[in-house]
Length: 480
Image (cartoon, rainbow, N blue to C red; front, side, top):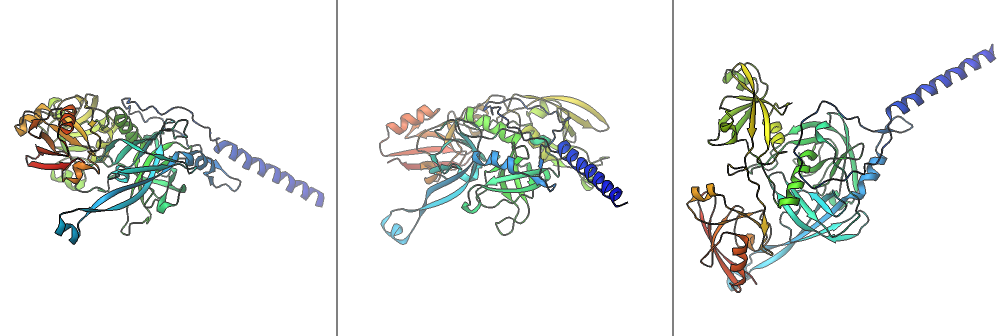
């Protein structure tokens, strides 16, 4: 009797162990390295989200999620970015003797290596005022970083260091992220290098007005992975070790993490990185509409049956939407077959394209729905792409002024300041968007014109110009 009982217990143990082993083999797929290169070139985005990728998440012996492989794979590709710049100060001594003092300001953040030859993506606010950028690797090796381009609208920037054969993260697909999916945040909070935290995707396409008052595109991935000051520009990765976002902001009344963090989706990052690498500035596409979200209250007020889609409140005259036949009161339901249900989602979808790209919209007018082919435009109403150029030491990039802008401001020539950072222009009080019309009484049409004016000016140069709002400006720059 006792022998029979022992045999039954042994048989039960064998069966139970087999079930556990089968479960582990079934649900734990190996974490394979992805050696495909991130291409710093633009590819038109396709919105096909029918298939959702499975997460390769390993499970340890206790049945808990195991992020060790993903963390080990990703940590070497996340860098510590240290910046410094001189901030002007005005003391009583300066006031009396007409001098100007400065104090050195230091800051730090994180960045992600996205190519083996040293391209690094980070947040624009991490390096915005930087005069010196130091990039410290996970192995403590240090490099000097060069700004390739910045985009304040998406809060992204691209740096380059002089190095090869670097570890880097491969791009994932942020469209495939699911609510509740595990993710890791990797960065350098409070100067604590190579810190890894874990959480889940709490929401997508979140707008938090992090840069209230500025023209921004916000469509954040919200997670509950801990992110603190210094983590900005760090990596948000999935369980396979793929880059799915760039950590950018937290929602907090204290300045430190209290449960919510936000990352820029990698699909947007990929496009902006390609733009900055090729042109030095983001190639932003516009539909030419003002839009608003629909809810029960607005739908009732506007006499609309349901709350699906994005409401077109106004159509810009001569814009892409007007040319394609879209009118105020229409409702945009989808872009290239992908449904949009908020202005944030629609902005994110359009941000993946350059001017001149064609998109197909599902548009509802009254009770009927139709397909609309729309050619996206640049901010001047054309489809051309613009390359940003720079003049050394001035702390800005420059773009030619469009014919439309010249006509509106009644000027015949000019060179517009873009991507303003710490430098001589900012120190003189010039703001982003200023159009330099003359330098030392010479008309300016190009970067070459400005360089020639600087070379012949000696120790100082006098700039005359106008802002896009029509306000004129006059600035004296000390060059040496």
